[in-house]
Length: 547
Image (tube, rainbow, N blue to C red; front, side):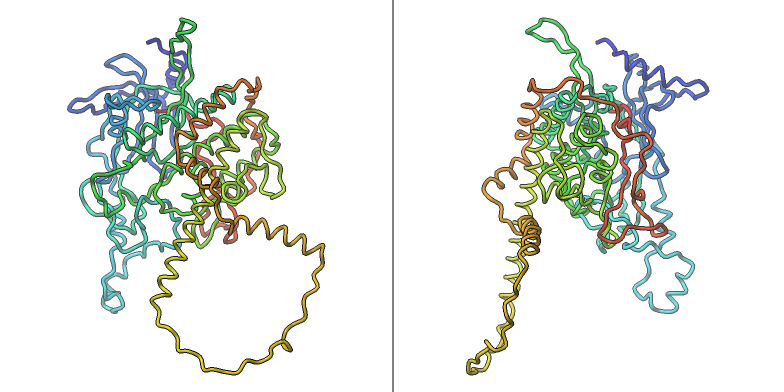
């Protein structure tokens, strides 16, 4: 198979003068394989995180270019390595399409973090008789740990980090502290066959829909055949992989740009044979900009198919409004308000109001947060795709609210039924109360009409019961095949305009109007219940090529 020019170019560009060359060892079962690299194509910013670096590497054994990912993975007992997950997805009996092909992977021996151990020594558990003066003297030289209310609560697997239950088991079989904010990490390398392009390199709206279609298809087979859910669908994890495809009708090979769903390190089995009474790891975050409203508003909820499919919708929305022609003239603020914003209430970060209202109240994408704002329009088949998918999400949240309210009502009625009955009141003669009644209020027609119009919208959002059509759309919201049908129809349409892909519509001089989050106590925080902003993980380049 010939090597594409962009792969050679990426490797050539990594050979920066004065930058050291390395020969990296990567475990391959009982042996070790070697790969030549220079400057990383991708390098995670900042001190926090997993220190991920991505290289276009040369395999010393096959002399082929591959993608090498060097990172510090979460090291816990029931957390699978990304390479093990890819091996399951690449299984010959049930191969999953549109996912990376594993070459080799493994932990780097003797390189694991111990910061969580030092944290535990610095923050010993106080004895039960902590109020005893003698006990206080024994612990007076320690520094109190951070309170749970001062920390940003991140999404967790299936457990509540802030309870007194024991923590997850680390990779060495030792139980960890639930109150420890530091995770244990292990140095890890994984090599895959594909060197792909970032999603921002898509050529037009039709191709964008086609690329997302491929990744939804791969996600479907991963859940259906391999019983694995990705749990971090985002723009940075959807890549472009050119392939040579033989077209039977034209009897020649063509280059087809296909979608590739990468970064399966946060994935999890849909069904597990091992009953877990503890969280597999203390916390797990996705990519804020593309997480579903349901997950952002309920941080400890388990990720399901409906959340992942909504994330694909948000990816489509983000890349379309940023790189395609539309009626949105203020793209920077639209992206900040919809994707980056958050609501801060009681030290908890939840979904921003623009995204939340679009999915749960309006059932439509609009230009701004104003209720009377015009719909977002692209004048292409993409409009029908976004409208259909957003309507399904709206119906899903409507049905979910209704069912949750029914459960709460049933639980309240059951608790009331268990209460003792009050004594019967003494019999008294009826009295005439008409004299105490107030005279009827003579309302103003103009203001009455205005108030009822606004109230009607609120009641429709909060109290409207789902119809049979809502229930049907809610089921489609969690159905891969239903979403694939919508994407396939649009990708097959001949109504796409030519030249709809434009340069980045976020001006290079644009500045966010909100402070960058998460906001610490020492800075000026937004008022409780108001919106703030989180910076996206992907910048104008939408991430670097990776697999």
